[in-house]
Image 1 (cartoon, rainbow, N blue to C red):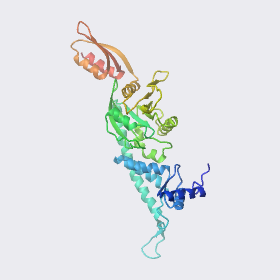
Image 2: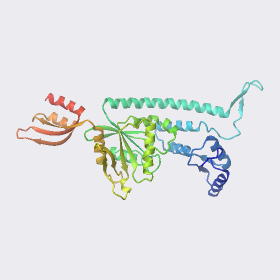
Image 3: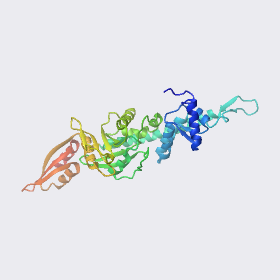
Image 4: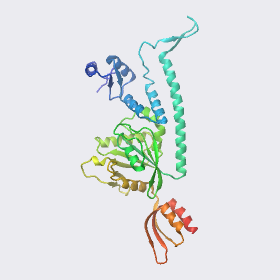
Length: 374
């Protein structure tokens, strides 16, 4: 209830931890809570073992998972931000280095600790500059997609909810997916062809977790901006996970932190095959808009419906109309199939073709130009 200011736990509990570590020959002690730098040092001194707090452990996992250059830069920056106040490599080497050319000619120099802090500050500045370039490149790519009117869909969700598996099933991609925390760190974008809407971009992102360390949110800003700038967020949820509601709220809290709370969202209850109770395949709100859908990447259940639902949410300016084409308007017919979803096609005795279309308004304007030219 009241953490000890020096060692987080009391002396008796610390003695129990030491006894357990000795009996198990454990070289590493993990704390599920965050420790202050002083607490971490004091506990390490008492246990004579390495100690990792919650944030430290998450950073270690991130360091193992990062594969691309960008991902490694982001993780290193987060580690530097975390370790800046934890610069302790021992207690005997932190004496001041003597300044000056000869004995007694100079004052006290900088301590080893100060030298380490200076080196870290320089490295942090260099990493921040590199990641700033990455952010500019990503912003330029997003502007290009917006100019071409290509919608972007971002996957977000609690870690190990099945985002990368869903990404692979929808795009026939080969993003690394495994039953482990933070399997995917590196942002990946792939093309997705949707009914009505046509070409869209699907992006996979890092998984969220309760109280995601602020250093990680800052370091992964370039990646998380893909979520904040998306046209639609697929909030992927492990339907069979315990504490389901709290995990959904944790993800929404992170989305709010990165400025993505206003982006339209569709809840995707994944891993539905693990449930042994009835579930609703598609849920709509009072306005008739889809709000939640059930899927299974393992069995493929709901994936086709998911694509149709994404298209419905993106194509909010879709109209239904019927066009009548003369027999010689083959090019116009081809454009109808290219720009719209053809619901019904029929021909009369004169050879005229009637097409019932479901089409976005912007594409209808393009089609009308083709029809006008014959």
